[in-house]
Image (cartoon, rainbow, N blue to C red):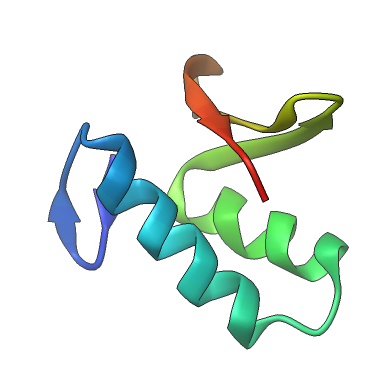
Length: 65
């Protein structure tokens, strides 16, 4: 999916993008909403935040906060 305006499958780049976008958001709900706009679905689990690609909801990886 897209991170920083380029197509990537690299989880490190996606995590950097998620961190930057989280810093711009006031709440976690706003952050999740923003990420849906970029094509990512975020779901909090015990292991961290699952990152899935939309619209297939295909798991990309787990983002430990």
